[in-house]
Image (cartoon, rainbow, N blue to C red):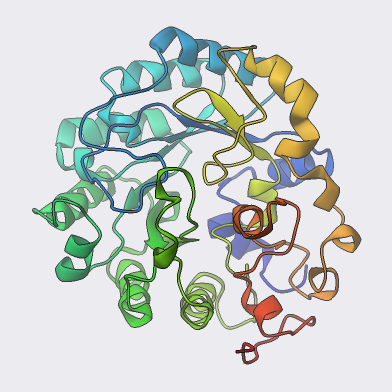
Length: 366
């Protein structure tokens, strides 16, 4: 394949360790490989930009029975993995039982946590057990405590120390760094060099790669358009992310946080029950409180997986001629929030910004 090697994409881009080829098959068949499930809106991090409007105490969310029905339908639909989101899924009292239920149904558990609960060795041990071959992602936007404090309503208050302790707990249990990620939400409140230093730190000190997401004014963050990062800053951090994740071979996933095989085989159930193409697109095609998930997916599958874009020739220009389009198609959420079309052009893409249809580096237009 062009650009990124298959081995490196298996390690990071597809988020499907050991099942990357299966995920690619799902993409070719335009069906779901993974389901993101926002199990709660509770999270102790209290990020200023949170799409879900999460806070320290749960105020909304799906019941245990509703989530069990979602898991049953996911298994019925042939979905392979559950990506547990929030808030922080570990803030939910019955998180372990729900993840055990998913595992019993043959579903892989991928856990997207703030990382704070993992500081408790008993919690870390249970997460390591129930995640199995899945991955665990923590969320430290910066290794610099002052930067992190600006991004949390209550300041840092020891959050970074707790996250690092939790990561060390998982590593001590034998979890491979290749089955872990640190997630960074990049905003205009962060200096690009700070983010670059943070990505390097995680890889050099812990062997852990970064899932780099670009802030979009979505959901509860819709009024925070000023936090959208500048194109030059996006280009700088994405270039270094690509270098760290894919080496010097010139591979890139643009301004995406993963490859197209992940977001082209995934749907989301939000904590209010809406079914959307991803957690950053908050407008649902329907709600599980109206109809069962299996019926919603069967009716809206093409919209959820962006079926129209699965052939490179059908991508918006200049993506159709980009040398990275065998694994990249731009961030669909960024396209949606920029122009109201989830199948449109990603305005954050450093190559499109540079007017470079060949997918090379360049200078962004003013």
